[in-house]
Amino acid sequence: MTPRSLLTGARAIWTLRNILVSMFCKGRPTVTDTNRATPNVDTTCAALDGDRAVLRAMIDRYATETPDAPFVTFYEGDTWNFHELRTRVRRRAALLAKVGVAQDDRVLTFLGNGPDLLVTWFAINYLGAVYVPVNTALLGDPLAHILDDAGAAVMVTRPDLAARLADVPAGAVKTVLLAGEGAAPELPDLDCHRLVDPADDADLPALQRAIAPWDTQAIMYTSGTTGKAKGVLSSYTQLYTMGPDAFDDVRPDDRCLICGPIFHCGSTLYVYAMLARGLPIGMMAEFKTDRFWDAVRETGSTYCLLLGVMASFLLKSPETPRDKDHALRKVFIVPFGEDGPAFAARFGTQVWTIYNMTEIASPLHAGPGITDKGLAGTPRDWWDCKVVDENDIDVPRGQVGELVVRSSRPWALMQGYHNAPEATAQAMRNGWFHTGDSFRHDPDGRFFFVDRLKDVIRRRGENISSFALEGQVLQHADVRECAAIAVPSEHGEDEVMICVTPVEGRSIEAGAVLEDLAGRLPRFMVPRYLRVMDSLPKTASGKVEKHVMRAEGVTADTFDSAAGLRKTG
Image 1 (spheres, rainbow, N blue to C red):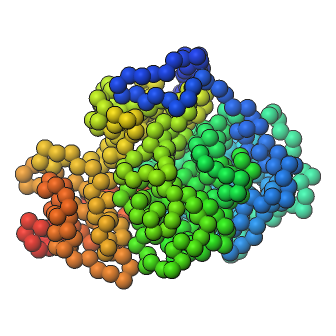
Image 2 (image 1 turned 120 degrees about the vertical axis):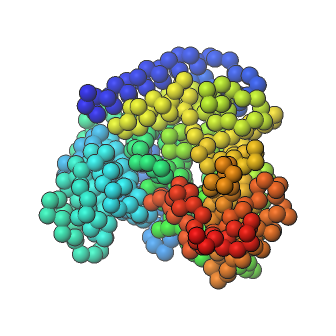
Image 3 (image 1 turned 180 degrees about the horizontal axis):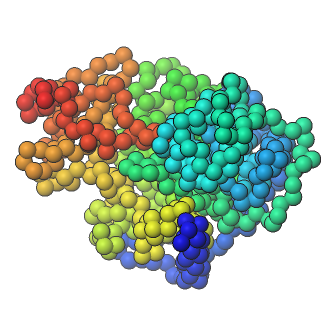
């Protein structure tokens, strides 16, 4: 069978599964076993109509109803209202159609945050085509894999990023549209053009059919921390459920700051959430600790997502008299660690959290006023969550297992992995999506993130959450980043090692850090090894590659507390 026929078969099975779930869920009573979450409200299965979920309908509606209302303010740049947004999107869509993009075609974008990425994403979906964003850090084999797997004939990118195509096979790419300044690279096998939008949208073709909420909106590639990135097939309904349906307490005067890359779902869903409500966003080209609060003030932003170490970086910055001189009232901190309450106190914001992955749609959330580290929240409408063992059997409340989720809303989960039916079947075995994350479910119905399954450390008969340990290490004033990993010991079990980077302008004294931890942690959690690094190895999406540090093990520059000195070989 060809990859396309395998994918078609997998999607047919997935469609049948969704139909059966929908039939089973309709009028279904609330589940109340000892581990499974009770939904917040009646979860009668309800599909979304296109006017609510589909991007083209949203843009047309607000450009008609509130044409002068602002939609986006680019930090240190322009502001567009909904009328201007629609004008730009339709002209860009006409350009894409002119180079051959039709409804259901896939289109690659290789761009960072800014006007060109935003308008190109919207134009692709306006045509009913499939948006395929590529991380701007990619090059070499990881880039070649996505070019080959996506099967897209058209790419929109910058000249400097397009130059990377000279070093890799281009897959199905035939046409490259170059946005921005810079000399065009030599790409003799590709048809390269400067991206110049037409003066009007007169050549914009009519849709072949109405865009449906279950149509594929995007293929978003996962980080691929231990293997090749997988392309997640995401519908309009999934993105709508992930974003617009996910956030409580959004007010008509709110503006969301997009400070993370919108080639990932983490920021994409916030853009979509505001677009669906007809509310504005601010946008930074990239997160910068020393520019963040300036961007908040300039754009008038009232809430945002701080992902990974962003909140920690802001807390490690020097205090100033202007720490509370801003309009930011609400921050989502993901994952929610030790720095959540401290962030709220210092900067005067509410703190919330949300749990999400590219494959799902924000099934858990919590806030405001939360303080418990690791809290992921309680299930949102449409979601059923439970914690299971390696055989998918429910574990008792309070015990650690893998979080699995399912939705009673058709198409709220991914449609599958592109060109990977076996991976799709494995992730969705027994009718639940398997997150690969260790969780516990407390007696009050709250779910707590413990660790990635592959990152749990086993030492002296105890399981250690690397996430919890990292949170403790990051409380040290000199530590900017931390990764906790397991390394083999001479006794045949795991030993604990932490890899850390220093805050700018400071240095890390290994013995002092470990002594501080020994005064605050159970003995079995205190690391034996500490390695100071200039930077932690990361994927192109910014996720820490713990497998790289595990493979390197105890290096010559590692401090060994058992010997009280650095390892010498």
